Length: 81
Image (cartoon, rainbow, N blue to C red; front, side, top):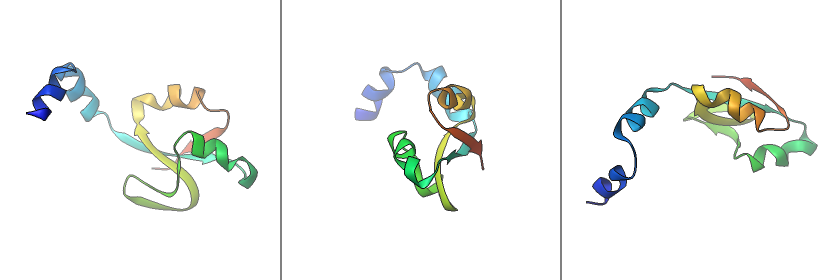
């Protein structure tokens, strides 16, 4: 019942299209002193998308959101997976 109420709030076609977009993992290119910038953007230390990335600040996002997300950050990023 709760699922149906939740689904009514969103356009079904948009939800399906969003689910079909591929995920990518991006790495924040920050120094130790800048790590809080990555934390503020919800990057995680070494874990993203069920994978391990040694000694990196990483985050899983939808591929079609990369450019917009990158523009919202005041640090460089690289796609790692």
